[in-house]
Length: 387
Figure 1 (cartoon, rainbow, N blue to C red):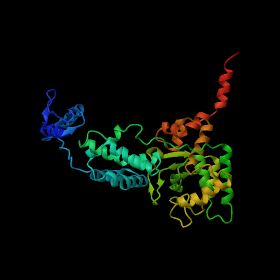
Figure 2: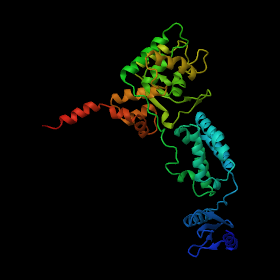
Figure 3: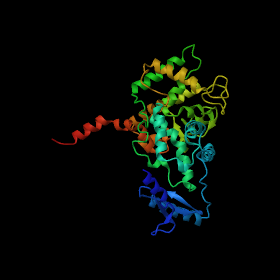
């Protein structure tokens, strides 16, 4: 052991030029292997391999030719996080930014905010994922909590602080798997009818504080998001043309914001039955600027939580649909199932629901399209063969 220490102490640990590439250096470790580096900005930067050193040298040359400043390798993850926070604050909707900021402040910064980006390797990220799994968090929640870290490393890569993100080299076993898009409830026509009938019955009761039946009708038949329906004003409902315009979304903090996506701004046709329902729902003194589903005090829409507790949950119970995991958002799948049964294509359904891409519609509601007239098409295929 003493001999090995003496040899280690006496070995040459200085950087040596790589004869095959200018600006690339190496030094020999105790075990005889080589560690690599490249010269840029007046000093040698370490790299994980010879190829990484070559790549680092090339990127440094491009940055220098573009007149960009040298990367600040002293910056901490928490410093970059504040820049990312401000960028997201301008771009994200209120609820989305709140979720992003929660993940940043409660998960990422306490765990790794004190480190430099170069100090956070894939092993440390894998350990963080294991810790989150140990808390019982679902895979989808863990992926959501890692979103700020991904944005931070995109900024670090752009500035030349690190060559790549540690998230990119995680193995499949280390990544949180499963828990993707939730299977939406697969409605049948009888269940949709039962829910609407139950809502009508509850709304007609003398003790009812608010008649939520019209809102449930609208959500189940048009596929509007609850936030979009609550943001509706009478000026956006054209009863003569039998259509409504979705222009905004009611946020949980009580503000009208832009719809979830650009495709959310759309025109939705209304059936004669829905037109009659809205005519009956509209107060005689309603103004164009009034919300369609205004609270009794006026000036604001009804509370989402009141609708959920007093309207939706009670209607689900009265319709005999309790215990099936049906959520308010599943009313969009009720509308989708109606549209699919009528033969609308994924592109047409996407337009009605406000999806930015028909592939999203297929991904979320694939089962509905798979089941459309399957029996009839199977019989037709069987009958096409003349025996």
